[in-house]
Image (cartoon, rainbow, N blue to C red; front, side, top):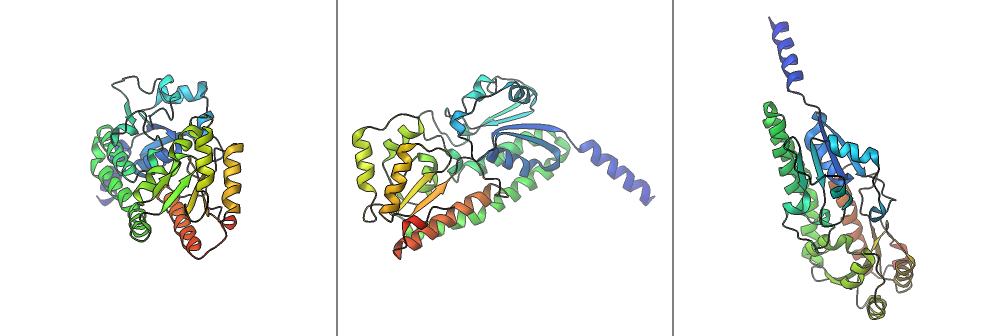
Length: 296
């Protein structure tokens, strides 16, 4: 009898299993989907190379097919991955769930598109993915809710670290070559300089002479305490600013737009960069040379 019950349970489990295909434009969104979906889902992340400039990505036939075949499509929006619109990711299909992440936090066109650095974003995405999976695997709704709760629990160390850094360094003046770290910088309570310059670099537009002069003038320890440097998108202008920061002993914290291969998950990636920020601020307070702080 026990053997029969066990076989029935195993068979029921197999019936409850799903083969849900999820396509995420960026690997950090795909990672969250995998954490919540587990073995029930097959996740394809289109942008996954941390050495690739996301702004230069062009899609191909294989990418188009994976998007067309997906049960759930996740993309950033705000023009960051506009090629997803061209692939039909925004086309209404009652057999497919489309998640435009920007909509989850009320971000509007023209806003800084790097919303995955906003601490509000991933919990909101986890809830949305959970709702989508619950509708697709109705027999396993409790399991989905548990996975969403576990994901949010995995973010607690990150949120605690943000609070700890903010309590000690709120009001610190910083700058950046691009607005990649902008939302996290705001969450940490930092004052960000040279935003217009950063937007021009992000949009592959030459900053004005006055913007460049203001940025160069700000690169001294009496004005800014950190320079955030986008390691994925560089050009002669940003390289020159990096050298100026090194010469001025302004600590440099390298950040990326795509989750690095050595990061176990999204929370691990964020914690790595937050630790780098805290380390740089501690060294900066002690006069540690900026030339040794190109991290992580």
